[in-house]
Every structure is written in C-alpha cells, then in structure tokens.
Length: 272
Image (tube, rainbow, N blue to C red; front, side, top):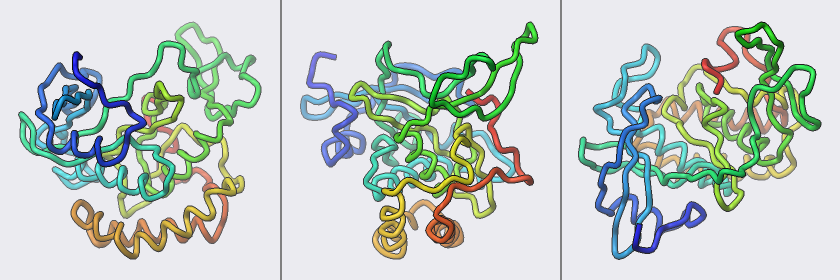
C-alpha cells in the first residue's frame, strides 16, 4: 500500500468513515471460514486499510439464528464493545459492497512475534499463570490441555462474551494487534435470546469479575436503556435487546463469571 495506512488503534471517526465510505476492492477469500468471508482493501482520501467483508448473501443458514442477520450481529458486537470503553472489537460497520450489503471490519495484523494467549499445550507442561480448560489427545494419544493465559485483557474479553452471549469464542478469534492490544473477532452468532455461551475462556468460571468490570456494567446498563439500545435496534430484535439488558443485570447482581451450562456445549468445535 502506497498511501497512508490506517492502523487498528485508530478506532474513532476516521476508521469508521473509511469503513463506511471507502472504495472497497476484494483481495481474496478466507477459505477456512464457514460463511463467505472476504479480505479487501479500502481507499479514501489518500488513506487505506485492509478489512474483512462478510456479505449477507454469503451467510450459511443456521438452525438457531434467523437468516440474514449475522452481519448485523457483527456490527452490534462492535457497538457494545465501543460502549464498554474497552475497545475489544475492531471497528465494524454495515455497508454495501461488491457482493451486496454486509459487515465490514478493520483487519487486524498480528505480529509474527505476538505471544500466544490460547492454545493446546502438553498436559504436563501447562505454563504458569495459565488455566487448563479441557483435556485432549493428539493423534498419537499424547495428553494435551486446551488452556489460556491468566491475562487481564482476556479477562475483559471473557466478560464481553458473557454480555454478548457469544456462541463461538474460538481461540483463533482472539488476536493481538501490532499495538499489543487484544481484539476479539467473528461475532456473527451472538445476542441469541436463549443461553448460547460457548467459549474457550472458561478459566475464570465462578470467580469474581475484575474490579473495572463492575463500573463498566453499571454504565453499560444505562446505555442499553438509552442511546446504545437505539443503535442496536437497527440490527437486533426488541427481545434480543431486552435479553442483552437482562444478561448485564445478572452479571451486576452476581459479580461473578458464570459457570458452563449443562444444557449447551461449553466449548466450540473446533476450539481453535
């Protein structure tokens, strides 16, 4: 890219304007994604940025989510993340593109030396300050653990996932950007009215929420009842917004991370 490239940390009006109004050229497709997921380049007024564009027409029908709603859920996750003040979801908008309307999210480049925070590790060698979440074995029968770091950035993301009712927090959806900020991506299956939380970040289950989460949830509850709720109404149903408010209230009352449900798979497949 020869023009000024927008960086992930620039998540204010400049990034949103580029995402909404920039010329979008497709570079290629992310073939491992279950829905049509395209990487593109945005250009506007001498600025460029890579993005992830997910057209609505490329969404695979799901039995438990209404057709054609995943892009709006991606945008809603960003709106909630922005309202928390934690900035855990890259800037995301709903816009028209080469294949019709879809979500458009700022691309996050992970440095080659970025520290891994989630993964499979030998069961007898779980790193210090890591939480084992699930047991596994490789093709040769060696014991491994699905585990994640006891990292305050991950702890915040785990709170956000409870709020969003994220049904698909895979390890590969946790990124560390070049500014050492942590980002969560791929939020198309969030905000269901039924309990759907499915995540690899169960290390804090039953523990008290981080102190900064308490004040955040108090403020977020007010935002959902006001301006944030109005923004979300463009993408979510009245019932989904009401249940979002109820999840926030439950977290405020308990002050603790939830335990895995016995009625729903607790860990997504594949986990990474």
